[in-house]
Length: 276
Ligand code: AMP
Ligand code: MG
Image (cartoon, rainbow, N blue to C red; front, side, top):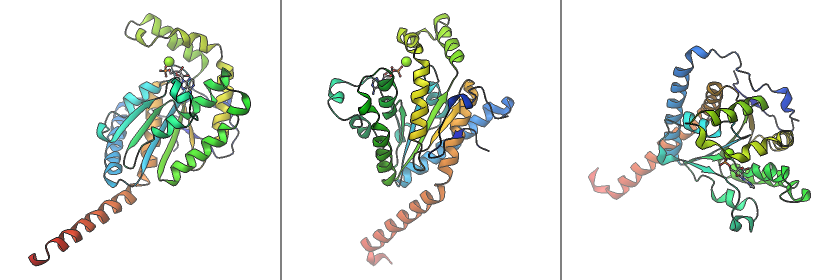
């Protein structure tokens, strides 16, 4: 059973059709154990990915402010070996980054074979915040959907498994979370006055997201819409989708390891011809 909505290539997304409160009839009662089991399996799969050195894995996390990108990283990847994983957070570009094409800084941050890379924001900011605030001309950002698709195809051709998650919250939920940051001393460090001013552009962001989801979901780099008003469900849904995707490669990674082991044994035999 799918826990998230996969956007099929060519589908036109209207975010109003997706309920951010949805929990897909999942029972909240056993959730802690379920997430623990999934995180553990994710850790095992990641170990195999790292050992096989055959694929890279790229996870893109996008969502409105307060949608839970940081929280997802903290909860879902708790059993991952830090040696095989990194998180890259994309902020407003530096002067040097702005002096290059928009994918320059992104490409440099992509995971090499065996690594799991998590993008906290990504190339998509260049068709989101950049579009909403007219940071470049329309004829520039409108080309970027195709450019992103080509870029992601290039990564896939080099055996990068790509999953892109849009953490979908409602406007009311964002307001509640922003207010909570003001009242809860432990959350106040996350406060950013600009979050309130960005909130005024909610509709423009939703529209920009709809275009990014519609135009850039492909078979090699699908978008998944995650109902994210409930944090427990968001974590479970992301973990489940990741594990289900990685399971499909398990046998391949295993064969890769066995073949590599065989090669090494053959080499050793050649090095020690007289010992037999
Ligand atoms: P945060 O994720 O809260 O640390 O904020 C990062 C900020 O960087 C957000 O306000 C993003 O909109 C902004 N940002 C990320 N990428 C870009 C970009 N390509 N152009 C402009 N702003 C960006
Ligand atoms: Mg922020």
